[in-house]
Length: 307
Ligand code: GLU
Image 1 (cartoon, rainbow, N blue to C red):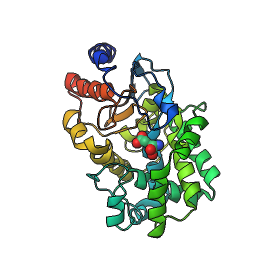
Image 2 (cartoon, helix red, strand yellow):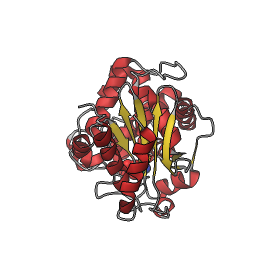
Image 3 (tube, protein in one colour):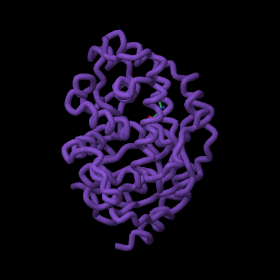
Image 4 (cartoon, helix red, strand yellow):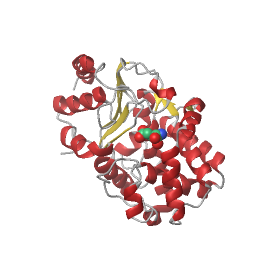
């Protein structure tokens, strides 16, 4: 298949959508991003990449980082992790406090904010200190992407903390239910630091390859997680990866994936490739407008989906 022509065509087709999305504006550091940008990268198992658009431009990966922290926590705690968090779609907004109260401080899944904050807490337990956990999460992402240059944007992380009232509330609520071990500020700070990691579509697409290949990086040969753990992460991406539009994404795209408010989306074609798209203008559900459409066009044009 001529992947390069296909993604060139997609970039053309989504270009009218770039100005229709709305850039995340809950913190000034993200509100200033120019919406008129698009990139898409496919990575095959031999490392061949096909890119279109601004594939070298770094952006804030935000909630996509939750895939990597979930991976680490699952690797360390295995099924014991599910004592702290569930695996059901929330059917509520990704930062709902009401649901967490009803469900006694146990977050629905690892991708809503409460779940990801809880996972960060488990990683601080494992690594022993919040700064250490931040560094280890970053190191893990560098290993997955095979790129030591990946770093976080400290301005974004600080700005998140200054405006982080709701996430601090979620963490406090979990703490009140005895489902958070470390000091609230340390956990939320660490959570914001991993959300503030910057990558481009080439790096992200490369980093996700292990989830297309049963937990094994096909290029380095490193077995990051078991086949069963990889299956579970893909399942949670399919059912919970796109905020309140996860059903719609499964319906229109048909691939496991995860999006972030920075406008990035990653997706996995099992046994074949991983994909990353980026366009900062978001739709009403907080997913990249042009990015979601690009993935839908990709699976339509290629017939590659899990269904
Ligand atoms: N740092 C963001 C928050 O917790 C994550 C946003 C996202 O990508 O969902 O508000």
